[in-house]
Length: 118
Image 1 (cartoon, rainbow, N blue to C red):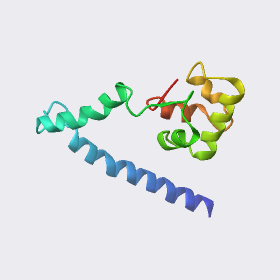
Image 2 (tube, rainbow, N blue to C red):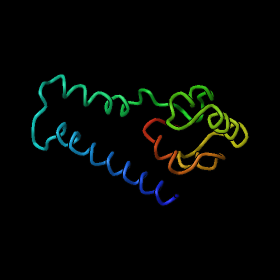
Image 3 (cartoon, rainbow, N blue to C red):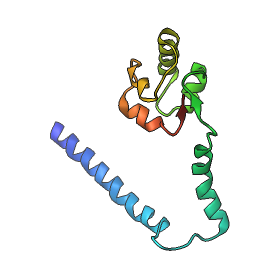
Image 4 (cartoon, rainbow, N blue to C red):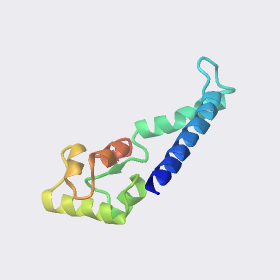
């Protein structure tokens, strides 16, 4: 029975991957210019905003509620753990030090590197 579930799960994953590839390829043709200047601006705006520090959350000063709101994969419980760690051990010196907080792993830190600052 478990082999049937595994086969079904694998087929769903493969179907999802195959279904997404053509749509992505159609929207991002190599070498073709965007339809308008507005399209260029809308694509550049999120990267520009993150690069200028807008929308970033400070792991050294933000309250738990803000951390939970702005960090991907961090709920209120993990956010409170970050604040408790910071209160006990002082401010974070590096972003990687966030992995020392119970419940925060390397993948969670990697996922949020563009959202957090010291």
